[in-house]
Image (cartoon, rainbow, N blue to C red):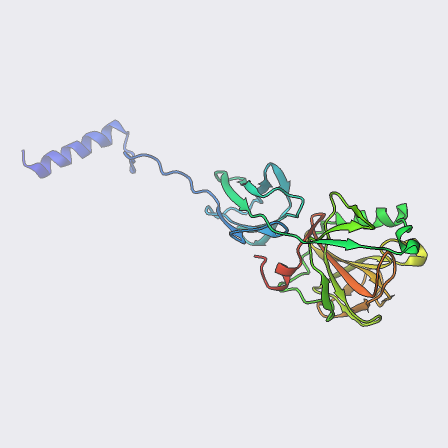
Length: 295
């Protein structure tokens, strides 16, 4: 029998065995594609916000879960099949290997992230007796703590963030401190301080909603006059020691809008603005946000 005829006969036999099936796969089944994951920055260090960008490879629209060492963080859609989670770190984290897991309808992705160490300087602060004896009020602490934990779905912010004051940086993020000779354990400077003249402008670094307005006369003895902006999706800015407040609770502000004035209210050694940036309740370094370092 000619080779072509033998090949035809084998095809007929296979057709009969399979009951007339039109498609036959004799190889191994292809493994399902897992999520494509982009982690930014690629070499994070203590205090960085780690952005995890997830892309579905199967056209899925179901929101995955993103975990860092087993702790889940909120995930928000960017566009169809694409999502982002923000993972905060601080000087209180240990440098080393961390595990990022993306779990959902597609095969789980397990990715190692190496969090680099970082040097933070030490300051010695001497407070005069009238300031050293000031204690915060329960009302003040409760309102600030509630503000820092906000996670609202609407994203107002865009990067890069703006510099909220034109004053010089007097204290960078992450500094450890002695207060009147006593080391503050589990403390790090949770923001950036800008030294500037009393009353000089403080602007919103990004758009958002004013959700916290606290004044000395209302019990904000430690923070002084305070403004909190909810930028959305777990990102929030706090501004303390203000001389005045130019906004009201519930107001939506735009990036660059004046919101108050530099001051020295609360526990402060001189006129300056303290800007703290919180991501899911953790005070992160604001500087990368000013230079577009967030994915």
